[in-house]
Image 1 (cartoon, rainbow, N blue to C red):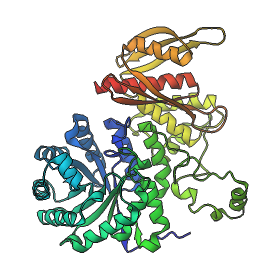
Image 2: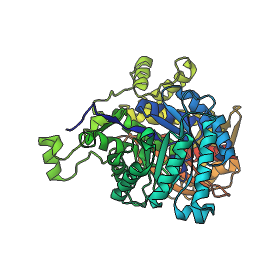
Image 3: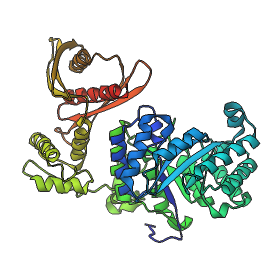
Length: 514
């Protein structure tokens, strides 16, 4: 196995899950959820966290501020801004509390963007780019510039724009393949051209940001590294606009395996990759496809008899990666109803899920939920604990919580559900409804209490762990009257309960969004 710890060039890992990843339809996150992911990104060891686009909404502004305060000096915190003075000033304001702030601004460079969107010529674009970078430099010395749609741009214009912003004070330059258009070889050639034709390029960091519209984001990113980029921009699970971005886990493990050829390394703690993938999936509600590289459920599963025989004889016959290297630990501790407070806290701390030690009341609530779960199941696995903590986080400060659910259904009965919800003040409201099935009846009862108007667009259920007593996790997507999509999740040993929790979670998000 060609794993190398010491290489001559360290690639900066720029994670944009909280910004570009959140732009996936239905993947919007609130501030607390962004903080949870930011903590995991720190455990991963990412170098730069792009926390949001402050000018886009008050929520994004507050999220950037909160992440900046949380991260401290452990990583660079980046905020996006268009090449517009108001955007730059808003981003700078959001970064006031950051110990290592970075302003990220830019403008389109392709003919399609200049003529079709911005209605300006190339010289005007360069002037705006220079002005934006100069303004950003008045707030911080760390300024990143992106030339949007560089993948379809004129290489000479791109080099001229980059030279101009270098002179204006940019310290990192990004050449995004915004639409995922470029073939990997062509993207690598573009990076090579820029490096050879841009005065001052040797004094700045060149970055790759590749989208996955043709399924080539990871390949193009690696081609960019081979051509000399020093920073790669990616997201957990490849989240992002349309078909998404280059997946952090794929890029990192490709570099880990091929570090010798490329003469590079990263700072990523790869054993945190699977946990990061699951966490982002839990929070966004976007499932990871089973055959997803590195972190998919089937990534290390062998069904073919030939493959099974080979792996049993020598694992590396069909596995180029060691599952332990990405955080799949076959020897994980299993807890039971006999496990005490100390054992639970120790395991949660190992998983990076433990609440603040000062929050004894909160931990007592978690322990009671754990005992309830352990009484139902013979063994409680790490996946169960992750689901338990995710459910706990979802219910903290929720506008409405599920207090009671009772259903009756069967043949020839009419499915009926009675639901009791409690608000933040502890007041209870009750409603009963009938439906085509128990879930439909429960959802109608919730609707009767909350008086909300929405359409259920997606309902997905899956088992979290093995066995007939596995927790059932439900993900739903609802559409508000204005077209916005909200995702909800719920987990419980009873699938009707988890379904109701998921629906209530989505409606809480919708009500909070206004």
